[in-house]
Amino acid sequence: MVQQATIQLVDKSKYQEANLDLINNLINDYIQSSTKIGQQVDWNYERVSFPYTISNKKLDDQDALYLQSNDSRYKHFVISIKDDKQIVITLLPNSTYGDKGKANELCRYLAQKIEAKLELFNKRIMYFYKR
Image (tube, rainbow, N blue to C red):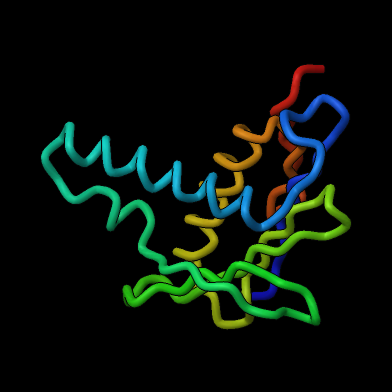
């Protein structure tokens, strides 16, 4: 299941340049908010909401974040940067439908924090910037 979702930075976006450090920081914020939710409901929610470990890898001669899971319902997906204005989330050939759901959720979170245009895996478009 090789599919891609893209987050496109626009003129009205909060950030004008995308890089892997920014994405990594936003993912860490996502994990922290999951941890706070888990503390409020007295449950290990962050492990369920984000069952991935993050590592840096080369993908087609460019740096990328590789998210891999040890949970049986999830495998992996990749986040990379294209042209400093576009974040690409790629489901790899053996990614699961669980990965697609988590990637969709993470895409929406990132696009909302960046205030960008999001094209989901099913080619639907969501706008998170002021128009």
